[in-house]
Image (tube, rainbow, N blue to C red):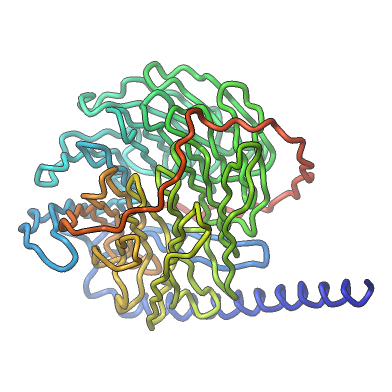
Length: 507
């Protein structure tokens, strides 16, 4: 027994040393990239607020650091939509460019694309799928800062979350497509946290449009709170506070359950009572978001591993486990609405995020459907940053920052045979992606330049996939009621105080 414990300790120490070596290597690459960027970008820049984002790895998880400053940055001129030319990757329906703001979040419903823009010009926009990309209307309470959006897949309802540039004013709004730039209702959050601003990962809208949920942190108390709203009135129906930081939230179809991403813990909460239905520790924290199926029977947990849990009639059990040396699976994972398919885009942080692989799984059989590797070169990090799926898992899309030389598309779309059936090639880094329920449309949001470069401006682009035969997913039993396992007492460790970085000086 002593020999076994010694071996396990040696393995843990080796993993920590490996991760620390990776941190040093990535820090060196980031410094080189920053120096290179600052010397060769002056000829093509115009005035504006700029942001550079870097991802570094620690033994506990991934940390995303953001540098915001006044500088000169390349801009994206507002251009007319591209013609609908058919190609092997589908056809571009329209593009919408902004010279200052970054398209940090996108969400698609049956008729519209909703966009959440950050930095200078931060706002909410709505674009008709069948239009030319010009927004029908827009909304902003601040004009700058950060924002996030989540639209109902089966109803005309959207939740918009925003925080001002100083990070001391957070607000939640409810909209319909007919709101015409005036919120149906608004709620001011009683928190202040410039280090954890609003984002699309922190807000969710149920498929039926009845419920909006959001998570916010408080830099004073160091607590996080899950807020649940009646989507029609804005009435707060639940406040669930916990000392473990909340990074994201997802809702089931009727909003009765919320899957909360709490650092490295996935917590399934009953939104009517605040009771914990199920909780499980993941394998890392930071740059992470956990997705859930429409009925709540399947969810995924990312990190240094990728794990899928399914309800067995009594509780949730792990049915898929994937791990690869030096890979991070936290940033881009998805589960189809029917729970039949799960996918993840993992990347190798040890080589500067310059290689990775997309994996798709059949959940009922627990088998891997296949994988799609990518690799590139250059100084910029190709970090996976988002994922989405249609209802039955036959269309899955994955977004990443891409590499310096665009060695793979910033948005890649796959069928269930893991064949590339669509793509979006952004001039800069993708920050978000979403897929329509029928899989006909894929939308991506991006920054005008790479995330590792100082610069501003962004784009939302909508593509339409070409009709093609797709494999039929494995049939899964359809439950007549949403699974509700009995709550299980789970030991919760006392959270370790986390040092918070000092916010970067703002212009």
